[in-house]
Image (cartoon, rainbow, N blue to C red; front, side):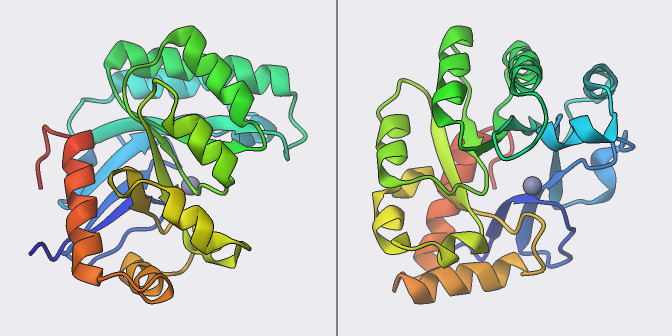
Length: 226
Ligand SMILES: [Zn+2]
C-alpha cells in the first residue's frame, strides 16, 4: 500500500518525503525546477495578478522558456466574479492560457469563482481535451453533475475550506472517487493532516484514500508514474 500523500496544489513546500506536491510557481523566478526532488510545478496567470500590474505576456514568455522537466501543468488560471477586475479581460487571458496549455498538451489548474458556465463555454470553444483540475472546488451538486457529464476531463480538488461548507457530505459523495484530489493550497495545514481530517469526517479509510489519489495522479501524469 502506497504511503504517498498527493498534495495536488500548494503554495508551500512540504519536506516530508512521502508527500508529492505540485507547487504553484508564485514568483515566476524559477527556471530550474530540479532542486526539490519530490516536487513538481505549475505556472500560469491567476486573475488576481491583474491588480498587481503583472503582464500576462511576461508570464507566457516565462512558461515558454521552461523546460518540460517538472512543469506538470499550466495554472492556476481562471475566472473570478468576486474580483473587481474586468471580467472580459479575465476571460481573454484565461482563453489565452488555455490555448497555451492545449498547444503544450498540458493539464490546467483552474481557479473558478461563480463562473462555471462562463468557464465551460470557453473550454467548449477551444475543445480542450487535456485534464482540467478545479482547484479549491466549492461548487454545488448541480455544478458537479454538469461538469462530470460534460465531454471534458474535469477533476475536483478540495482544500480544508470544503469542510466548512454546509452540505459538504452530500457534495463530497457526489464527486467520483477517480476524479478527487486534496490540496493544501495557501493554508497552514500540512496535507497529511488534511487527509486525516477528510478521512475522519467522512469515515473513509486513510490508506484507501491515499491509494486512490496515487492512481488518479498516475492517470493524469502517466510520464511520472509514482
Ligand atoms: Zn492556489
